[in-house]
Length: 125
Length: 153
Image (cartoon, rainbow over all chains, first blue to last red; front, side, top):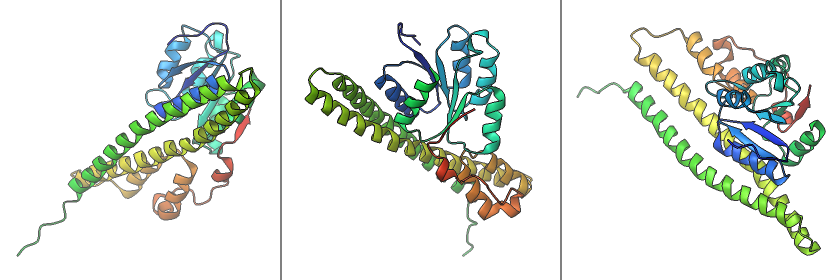
């Protein structure tokens, strides 16, 4: 994974290749740099070595789920204030509450609207 | 002539395998399609920034179409998740039927329900099997209305 210089960089985490491609296409069309991880564990390993400007993560993934990832990221000094968004098919109140308690900044229910996602990022960055 | 019993466990295994193959084929094609749409989105973005207003206008149209395609394609991801859950449930059923001692229905049903990741999957399960599984019978959230929603905490 390479972090591009001189632009806002977003870490996207999803075990679905096509979902990562769709999120990447949306973000790159707006000029963001994108790094990708296929699950929470891979994302956490990356985050321990580099800081990014924002994280967008799926919830249900193998090895480490998105809510655990948020919890682990919040424990890292460099990610204490980083916006962490969960992008998921889950829409139950209980799961959202879990995400909020773990330290997530927001919750987006798939399928995401590209324009709305970009507007949310503009608000947070 | 004595009839053989229906071989339920291998039939369940076969059905789960057929779903797995269909899923893999479908996902690999979707990845190609997603790459193409991503390329259109990048092209639209570059054209939109062009100094010639006519090209910039065309670029905006390409971007808008790519955006619509990106939205629509995500429904395949949900479809794939549903098929995976059906495949997993068939696997659970196969294991239960092949076990020397059949597990209690409530245990098997709880395992199947716990795999769901979408509220409308749980709703459907509860409508059909809620009483048997002891799962909630009412759901407050309107999942359809929540699709695409953004909530900042």
